[in-house]
Length: 376
Image 1 (cartoon, rainbow, N blue to C red):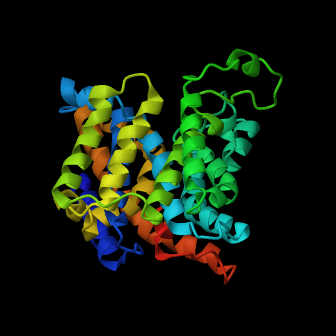
Image 2 (image 1 turned 90 degrees about the vertical axis):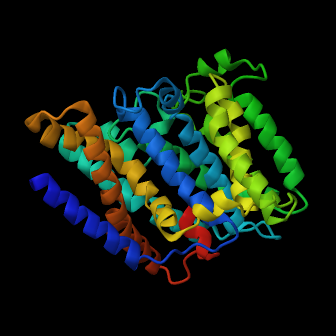
């Protein structure tokens, strides 16, 4: 009975959040991309916690979910695309202080909330806490997955944000071709497709030795660069728009493609992910229109909270509810999923958004290049 009451309150809160929230997105095809973040975040959740739960135990669905880690690469690529669409200009310049303040206001409040929850649930060394608080854990293989496991990707994003003001000058209309070549070469280097003496590099006595591992910001930078180049190409209208029906077909195909085509060659996912982003940003088919409605867009905007809180919530939920009430694996996963989605919407509406506005209010001229900045 108590669970029914909880779900009723969550449903009411979700309805309030959607009603009161007004999307900050400009149109231009980016609304549809926002919803893909929600789908990708759910894929990560399923990748972590859906083992043995119907219908995820179906071989076809299991094959799809088992590629869930690829969703993080999609986040990186999409981040580069959106930020370039928002900030790219003919001068190639951006106010670094304003830009970094805007990014800090966007990601840190809920990230810090996730760390507070995890800290209350466990015991951690001082070094571990410090690296996570300052978002440096991805630079150390030993600490990359400490405290809030998904937080490593935010550590990587911070590196992207640090680099972006120096990447931006290469995303102007005249230089974008050069940027595309550099990004392509960087992607080939990602999985050592181009032979380099990596073994020598890895043996150097560096303070941060994990330069080429799966969580390394440097190794994941090519995804961001590819996204940035795509963003510049669409910003400067160097890629034609797709007809509606073709865009819808391409969008669906590019979601399925990583499952049937990509195995261990992670860099190759940049191809279908790029096609997906272009089809949604440059098309106006049925799929694009369906994903641009109010609720899908709101869920997409709340997906960051869903992604960064899904691990802390499961740790708490497992100990506070699953064990005491001896829930089955299926009951655990679906009840947890409902709570997670509702909670993420509430956190986005009543914590994340107000906190972002509060932080940016400390500097009246904070970076506000366009309304689209809420999407990254």
